[in-house]
Image (tube, rainbow, N blue to C red):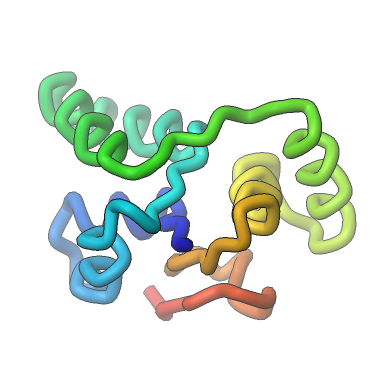
Length: 123
């Protein structure tokens, strides 16, 4: 199972220099978990930098994976992980969701760089 964090989705959608790193897990939608907080972050950035139509298309693409809502168990685990690893709320929520669903996180966010079960690509 895989999670693409927000930085990975944004890199892919903008066809940035690291976009190719994220193609493999994006093609395997059956093994793709999408934390709802990544939808929030990606929609916000695409809306800010482009158009609402492009933001809606990004969300539609993200929904090809299994969208996982934030629940009490994940929220509490994310709080602990945030304190343990000094992570912001969104990153700790993504990490908690990954642990809950036994996922590898694909990212270019340096906050994840030294964590277990992470495929990190330098931006």
